[in-house]
Amino acid sequence: MSPFEFVFSLFGLLLGFSLVEVLSGLVKTVKLRGTVRIGWLVPLLGLFVMVDLTSFWSMAWQLREKIPANYAVLLLGLSITGLYYFAASMVFPDKPEDWPDFDKWAAAHKRQVMGGVFVSNLMATAAVFSLLPPVAFTPFLFITNGGLLAAMLASALVKPHWATGVLLAAMLAFYFWFSLLPVLNLN
Image 1 (tube, one colour):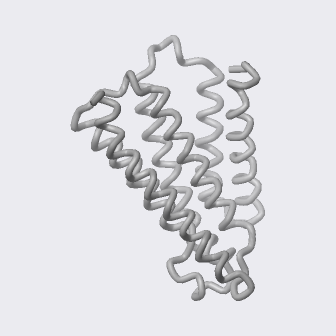
Image 2 (cartoon, one colour):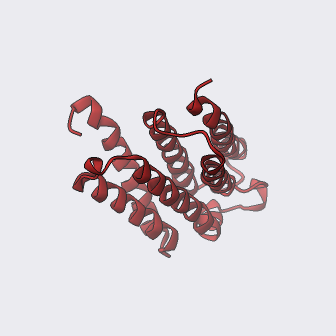
């Protein structure tokens, strides 16, 4: 077993549970359609959490040769993936029937969701920067990471639903664009 396989056996489990949290919330919600107003904010939050979580999984794979297997790395990974699990658990209500309007749920809980994702990304970014050689620090890397972190924080803090939705849609568009870079050979 490689160091990465050892370390990621813990990370992968928690990341998988996080995806299950969002997807099971979606399934419960779809079963109640017509009795609750789903709106657009909760589905956007759920989609963003899943996409961002997948980007973390992808980044971990790309850095697999550089990730050491030690207690500090396990604790950091537990912190990051634990926060992802917390955020994923807060996307949908446990009892959707108790929330006739999901946009109200999102307004009450988006700070926990996006705050958890923001702190996870902040810790992961710091960890990635500690593993990369100085030549890897390009303006593109700083601009994309800084912009994404700023948008995450802003989406946790802005009040109007429409502003949160715009920020979530912009970040999802960024991830879509970023996923095309290797295909287009632009990175």
